[in-house]
Length: 236
Ligand SMILES: Nc1ncnc2c1ncn2[C@@H]1O[C@H](COP(=O)(O)OP(=O)(O)OP(=O)(O)O)[C@@H](O)[C@H]1O
Ligand SMILES: [Mg+2]
Image 1 (cartoon, rainbow, N blue to C red):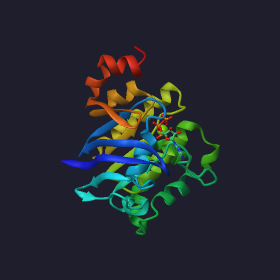
Image 2: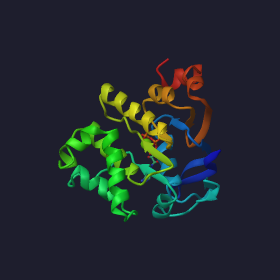
Image 3: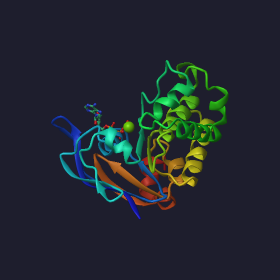
Image 4: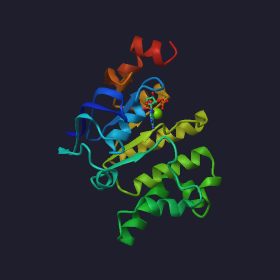
């Protein structure tokens, strides 16, 4: 079943149009990866889906309900969460405080603590460090906090912008393994990645974006072995 549908979306910043009619879909249970060169509009697409930018044309549907133009606080309540590429944690707060902030729309303390336990099960290291300030933690640990914070909202669909950016290969691998684990718990994921190879290996399906337009799409492994994708994004 279709969970998220983006159809012919045009969007950008002020007068400057960046997305010129982009269409993508995420079905229930899928991991979908979006790859493409710097400046392709990948982050702009996630921001537009999440309601941070308003499309000038096109439709966005989540769980068969139109969400085009809705603000982020309403989108979150429908079960669509987003971890931005930058500024995705509160550095001056502790791990636990960051997670509590994540659950801002939930006021039942039992549900909040259940979800927090779920996050600590996924990332045991965060439990050990729960009283540490996140600003003092490593890049990999911060990424865990950012993802954990989004999971506090119990999303149906989680959008991650460059979850492995600036991480050493071992840590990136760990984050990809966690993404798989999250997906195994029934959460669908839409991931934007620089690390095209690893993200296509992980994904059920992928899309290639360039210049604000769809270029290619298909099963992750099929894109991974596509000669054009290889030449353009995987270094031959
Ligand atoms: N806040 C902004 N105001 C104006 N232009 C912006 C803004 N953010 C991004 N842009 C422009 O929009 C275009 C697409 O940027 P976007 O961040 O969506 O690309 P991207 O595919 O995510 O790239 P990267 O791989 O570098 O993260 C770029 O030309 C960028 O300069
Ligand atoms: Mg980006």
